[in-house]
Image (cartoon, rainbow, N blue to C red; front, top):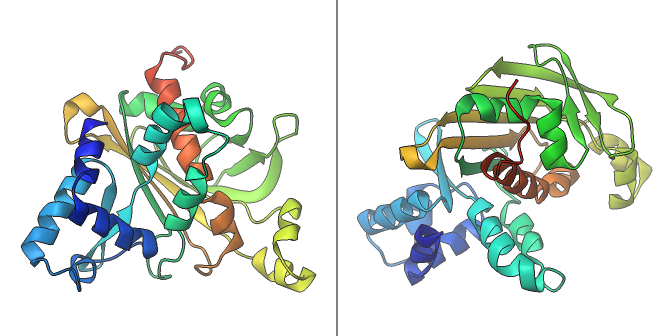
Length: 266
């Protein structure tokens, strides 16, 4: 966490984060406009923010786009705020807003988290029921994780796994997992003004992708990048619904893998 606090200590870097908070997925040129800093200075500040895990850069065509990564902030929240002020703070609502509104040609979510584990163990955590129950609280997916296979989903710990039209798109153990996301559920109807609007929104089908690779610094373990994209518009209700969820899930996943609470290897 020291790198995060050092990165946040500089006013110019906080301004760059504010810009990504207002509009995620910006290029170096866009971020530097009107700041009175040289391109080189902006690039150096972004490098510090990337090293701290507060910003993630993703290639999009010829551009390099930058995204606010809320996971380190969530970890600070869990450690320094959660113990004392959890019921008074609205930290997740701020994180939620920070991830809304990117242009539709860009990924909606790009999260990065470093976990002290192995690629193989992390892939197990994403696919094996014992792991999924441990960090998703009895909810989440199940599948045989073969390309084209269905991914069934349990929305409530006491419920049953349901077939919601989800399918495995890619499955490369220790490297990559991707599957389609479920559509809006009946319980989301209250988010809409009319049945017609709800019916149109239920046609949206997004997808989630997990990329696993060794961390740039070996001591950090494994780098997990999660990209959730394919939403119909920046105002997508599904986007709003999942915006805070992935942050909490990733934080719980990290805890399970690093504290010895993970199921024993088979």
